[in-house]
Image 1 (cartoon, rainbow, N blue to C red):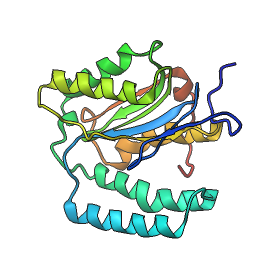
Image 2: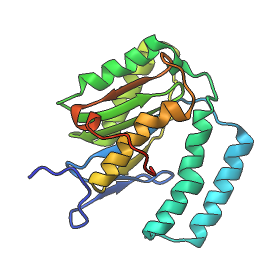
Image 3: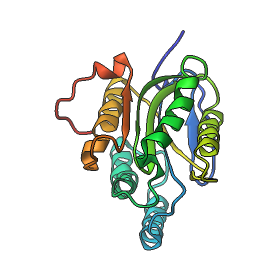
Length: 209
């Protein structure tokens, strides 16, 4: 039976060391990957130090409250820095975004089922259900787009993924993707936003994401 959300009683494939990756068959993922331009060195060093101290204090498994604090202190802070538009911002150019979109659309219905994505100037957020190993999908999208854009190795090697836990989590992920360009104060034409009919049906009323 097909399912969309994380099932606690089903096996989870856990891999990755520096950045853990969790996968479960037929479960949707919220994925972020970014261009390879380095974020400011001082910021990253401080961020890594604070993250290491926090993780040594609070060992997994975390409570929902601890997970929320971790996201606020480390995940969303990194997102805010990305939204500042640091680096080369190759994806600000519409032709470069179209290259990546072509790869994403190619796998629709075969390698995955897309629900929403936003291509920002220096990073990408995706909400989809993978039908193939997550790492292989992302590697293909990065490899093909880098080759066609023709700027060499443009992507950061890793990516961040989150299994979608519930219908509410799905709604919040859709809203986060939809609101990201507004939050970053981007003008029309400097980003690409796409939603499936299911994602487009999510209302945009105010709610904490």
